[in-house]
Image (cartoon, rainbow, N blue to C red):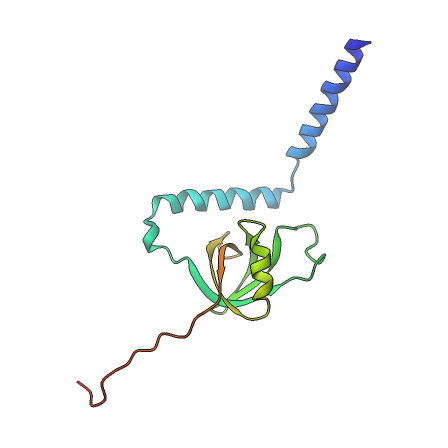
Length: 137
């Protein structure tokens, strides 16, 4: 009887592991591409990478994400539209405050410009204003 229970438990564990490893090939390819981009970025100088972007944040209503629950909305920046992913779940409350308006987001562009992974949320400040002397040079 004990052997039978042991065999059943081993089979259940094996099938559960096999079910977890069977992911959509598109999702696996995206994860592999994101990992390759992170490895390539690690070789670059951190100061030379642009990490702050200003644009309009548009969040999806609750329950509209579909099967890709990690995508929370879109970010329109410089004529490009990116799907928003969060580096940490607590960032969603900050994104809800700036939903529908311009915001300064700090993060990384992933998968050849398809996704923007948000690391930090801020609001845009006043534009840089340079005062010059009247009268020219």
